[in-house]
Figure 1: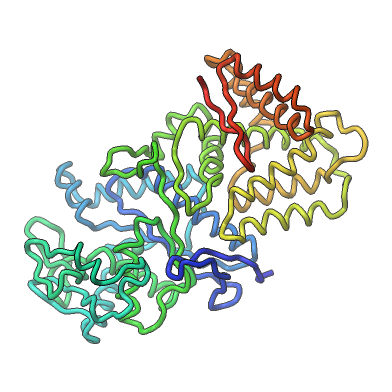
Figure 2: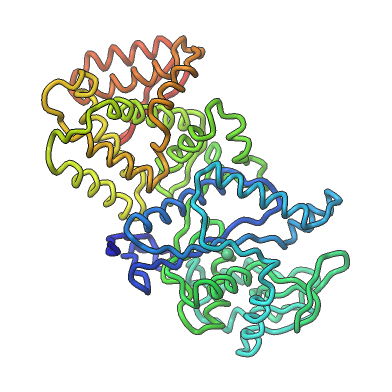
Length: 486
Ligand SMILES: [Zn+2]
């Protein structure tokens, strides 16, 4: 099955468009990777999870996915870090490439088809720069080579900026000999004490942007089906990649551009320069749960917000995500005890799958997809909790299949449910509220069910019980309540 109904928001056109790959059933996808000079933070984790979910969705809909993600292992920040540490560059990059790979395992990210490193790809970059020079889109100057922005008429289209505005913000740095402040560097001439490589333009090293254009051309051809990355890469990085690729090949560089939103703390963007980052490694090491539980907790947390919206990283939002996931696991644990025989409505399996896949296909609407899991849980929970009396309100096998589908596409609900629930009991030391996490989770679920059954006096009684223990529930439309501790 290769037909799919996937629609995605294209940053270039600013509309949601059907995703139609050049070759039916095959996806050429390129996502900008990391610059290896430090441990990755949760902003990187979110971006990787978003594109991993997209990767998984393409696989689930029967596509062959040719996914390339680069590693930038030569860059000003790396050179500075090596100098500060008094260590060789290769030692610094080796350490942080290992750290990045360890993080990808922690997060459960599927491996790309190729993961080229800039320093192993110099000849491809040099060939591309030579091509740009030959068509007049680039020029050598003062030992560097620059891209001539005004030779590419579409410059600014991707980030929706006009040249006049860009020019107002552009400047020529000391030591740069550019024709125009808008021009950007393709090859940097060698400087004293910095690593350099031979090239027809003299000793030096590549600029950052040229790396992605050269690698994507090599592995995926001149036209990508999808180019992705964080919103911070839209300008100048992606604008420059597009300009130099299209100037060299004369064809569309990417049919679709997908960007994920930022991770914020107290509504301020998480970034290294602001000093408010939290590393993936630290999050896992400080988590009270085993790695496989922490992985799903973080995935659930990020995927419960649409990928284009900012995510505010707060303890309350994390606690709500854990409770919501616990609720699904409690249902899954009871389901595992249910017999394998088919019960309930015949077409449940189709209905659940259709609703879930439709949500993911509609611009990767993971919050709606998660709400499908909760709707299925709420439908079957009273029957499971009552000892499976009478006819099941939904086919248990269909709910199980839905949860497995969530595992394949979103990377959640993959832990053995009895282990997850046992872990909850073991972790059940009572917090300041006098209630264990499991007890709180159970009360929240009971209250949700009472509300659904319009038994408001029971729902209010549970809410009051929680409030006595210092836990306030704030109801949110279309999802589990937000939990605030007072
Ligand atoms: Zn890139």
